[in-house]
Length: 391
Image 1: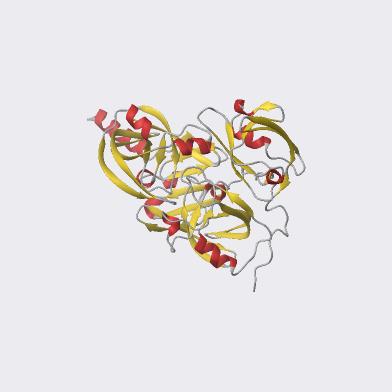
Image 2: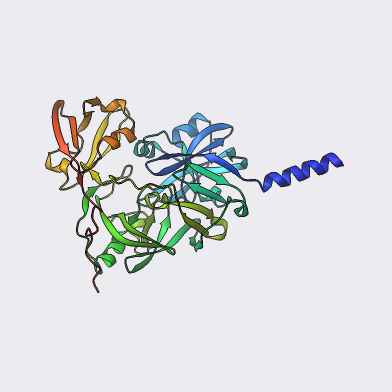
């Protein structure tokens, strides 16, 4: 009897304990270590996804069998896919038995993040947990809300199915953006931009921005002078404007856009999705990347052969002026082989204080050429970056 009582007390204590997991952060997106059927994997922490998912090739390797089909509304498409059941999915000490996972191809996500991604941890799992995420510390703390430390004022979310929308104000335009930790940028819909542009005109934009994965019309970047998230005011925030698309959430008028991790990473965030709320506390360890938009102006991706190629060239950028083209292969950067570098290392060498020399060797149609470019501040560089909002 005494032994049984001890076990009961021990289990009760464990239920109220907190635990800290180390996470990876790639391109501002948090990757969480999990276990599927006892196998250690790395999943994107994605509050923009209603369902958790596993990579198609990995599902085959693990011998997972389809138990049905489903249609999923994505940001830019409607995806038809299958569902597989796993015996167990574990995150820290939490284990979920007989979990259903959608089966999706994670190849594009892996290329965009520069690391191998095994799947997505969505709100079907995250909604059952209370947790705190700190990007700069690379920590995910699981436990009862009472054990997660001091909290800022809560932000009440609007729930739609298993998705959550955050109240925001862009300049004087109110709206709701999808809470999406799985996307590294904040994206506004074309309808939202039409309303915003009637009130305010940015002094400059970056055009020609593309996304990995499903092709969409090229977007552009602007610098918002003020963005109110809940009760927190943020200054000079870069957001992406998506031109009209034909499918997915962004094709509907009522969808204003998504609040991504490039903004969320500035906070220590406590998630209480079961009660439709989050807590945002400014992260004292966060350090703004002062040269985030002081660059030569390209986007790149790594292919299956380990080579880096140009995905887009931003209009009126140093790369555009130098004649860099989409599809060019990046062979060397400042004399070093690009293929030997990580995605973060390549990105770091393409940014720098304004006027920094960047020497590239690019290959096009089998011919190599050497280019010398200088970085330039393209956005959010000065207090006069944006014109005052019209009265």
